[in-house]
Every structure is written in structure tokens, then in C-alpha cells.
Image (cartoon, rainbow, N blue to C red; front, side):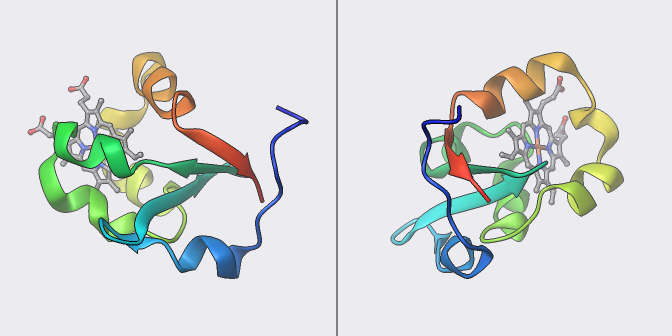
Length: 81
Ligand code: HEM
């Protein structure tokens, strides 16, 4: 993952819609989850995190505290913060 590009928080925050792409951050990683939005078991709630950090939302929705959820997320990694 050290070969992935580094993005600023501001750059991430410019990707908060399906047309501009939906990016999120998690533990220093940047993820382009645009293609996952339609597959999300929790529906469009996922867009609340668009352009920012997943942590506060996943703290509220503990269903994400499972290895298989992190495996899904890892498929969408595009860079580091
Ligand atoms: C459920 C993935 C972001 C709300 C789930 C499940 C997965 C998932 C795999 C099903 C878990 C299971 O039942 O074993 C993701 C990923 C996210 C993300 C990869 C980000 C990239 C969010 C956000 C919210 C959210 C930001 C809320 C603001 C929910 C809710 C459920 C859920 C409410 C439960 C749906 C139900 O069982 O009825 N998510 N999620 N998720 N997610 Fe997310």
C-alpha cells in the first residue's frame, strides 16, 4: 500500500456524490466506494459519510465491526491520507 497516492482531506471532501465519486477515509486510508453504494446492505445511509471519515458512523452502527466488512472496504482502497 506504500505505492498508493497520498490525498489531502480537502481532496477527499470533494468526492461526496455519485457523479463526483464517493470517497471516504478510514484509519488513514482513502477509499473510493462509488461502486459499492448500490450494494450496501444499509442502503443510502452510506452517503452520510461521503467525503469524510467512516469512524463516527461505524461507532454508531456496530454491525460494521466485523472482519468481512473490512475485507469489503479494502477492495476499494485508492490511497492514503
Ligand atoms: C450494514 C458495509 C458505511 C449503515 C452493512 C453491512 C455491510 C456494510 C457489509 C452488512 C453487515 C452484516 O450484516 O454482516 C459498509 C461499508 C461502508 C458502510 C463497506 C463504507 C464504505 C455505512 C455508513 C452507515 C452505514 C456510513 C451509516 C451512516 C449501515 C446500516 C446497516 C449496515 C444501518 C444495517 C443494515 C441492515 O442490516 O438492515 N454495511 N457500510 N453503513 N450499514 Fe454499512
